Amino acid sequence: MSQLVYDIRNSRYINLTGRCTLQCAFCPKHNGSTEVHQYQLKLDKQPRAEEIIPLLGEVTDFDEIVFCGYGEPTLNLDALLAIARHVKAHGGKTRINTDGLGNLFHRRNILPELGECIDALSISLNAQDEVTYQMHCRPRLKGSYDAMRAFLKEAPQHIARVSASAIDGLEGVDIPACQVICDEAGVHFRHRALDVVG
Ligand code: SF4
Image (cartoon, rainbow, N blue to C red; front, side):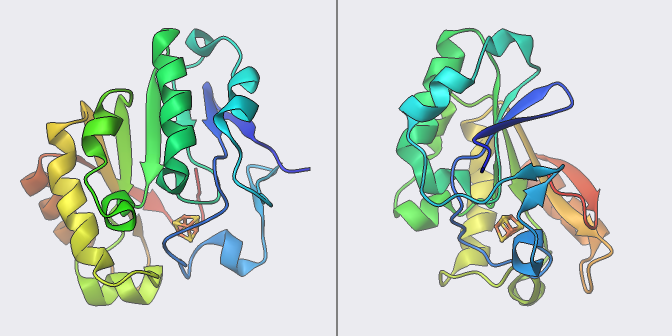
């Protein structure tokens, strides 16, 4: 049975979609695993907000309600916004883990809408340049790297807490260069260890 919500530490995570704009070579999904922290996250269809909201519980009991899972949450944007508005209306805090391709995918700037109900964004920067990004993330859409960088730059104008991450130990990924990109965009940089998702 796939899991629509799951808890890691003191946060509740929402598994909003199985679809992705990337096909990361390092993703466990492409390496035969459909589990994160022992949770079965494979989804056969995109859940609707009405299916998720009753599973949230008392949102103030958690540090954050996080949109994450084994797919890109902004691909299920209507559900994401409806759930996030519900969380904010009940005093909770919201975060999205995203590949930063929501604007490219939707062909418009979705950041103002996110800004109304999202407290924090964690963006997967993953690489300091397009060649390295293509090698590891294998994006489905043309222009993904530039679109992600533009999203990273614009995000702090709409969202209070923005961070970006790259994975330490992946071939060709220059962690200090990723740090510089984040410093210039005014976002917090986090480097993650290989094989840790979530
Ligand atoms: S964005 Fe995340 S879930 Fe999607 S392919 Fe990459 S690592 Fe996997």
